[in-house]
Length: 339
Image 1 (tube, helix red, strand yellow):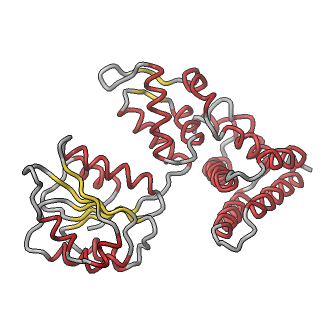
Image 2: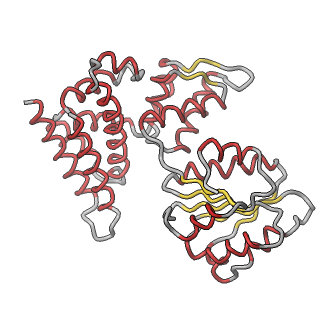
Image 3: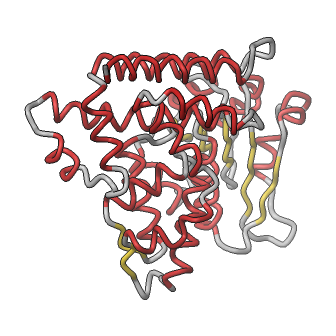
């Protein structure tokens, strides 16, 4: 069965004994891991976890069904985890779903699986399985995710703070959760003693956001300040910063695209920034970008940055040089728009 976001959260928080196989696929590996951990918590603190890797599934396809049907050594609850599952596990999953009985749920995380692949299709077709596609949240979806996690930690978070925190975390669910945990600790918040997470609290813990230097560079790119872009790129000097930079840049462009819809619909920029509760410190830079970038330019920039990231994944690519060239090209485009 193919699950929606609401259905999968309900399913992992209250597991159905009839569900043998949970398949979390898609690029958001941190989100998939978080769902897997929620199911483990729902099974109880004493639940035994059995890990199986792909090598074992290829060599012994029947082992998955055997582990799912096996009793725990001490007679308690157990579950099976398969990380980085691949299409090569199709036979093992088929045996699991066709087995006369199972008993222990199997959770598989497959960030490299395609939705059109055999394994995902098998999970969707089976009434004994749940399949859910995990995608990295962007824009307003990321802000809503931040607010949801914050509520679980006893925090009432304003939309602008949630947006800023999601942006600072680069859309990574694990990083976002750690940042919210720090914020809850700072405010002494918990579900039984909720606290307001305002801009002042965010600023108080914001000093150690490791990606803060990227925001200054991204603003310079969208402003067309070529001198700053050159200096900042030189200061970063590689060191693994290119991919995070491109991903942060795409997320900023996605936010601009959402805001641009309202502006093109007739709303003025000030109204749009208020409606979407843009974090006050980001308002000046976003306002400048909205005046400089139209919808078509934003869409093309998103496409180009994503193409650059994909190109960098190839072993024979020019690496960080590709990212630096693309950032410079976008900055030049913005500079021309500025006149």
